[in-house]
Image (cartoon, rainbow, N blue to C red):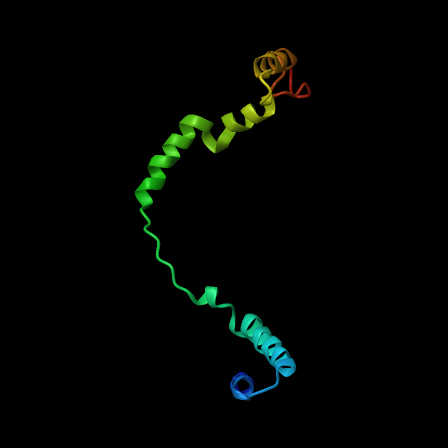
Length: 110
């Protein structure tokens, strides 16, 4: 903690010393370096508040299940069928390919 206090005191002293323009850029570089790497940028120190309602997530979960299925299984299937307008042909091809398979595997069939 003592090192931080000494460092902070050094920065305060350096920031109050009148300097020529060339030296000012060096001092500015040094103070910016300390500000951004040690103390953190000012944006980090701002506080934010958000309205949060846990009941909304329950309603949205039901809507997600209706649209995309449990764990997105319908969405994954739609992505696998493509978005170029040939999804019906691909789905039919997959049904024909998987006919007689047990979850797509021949090994587990009797």
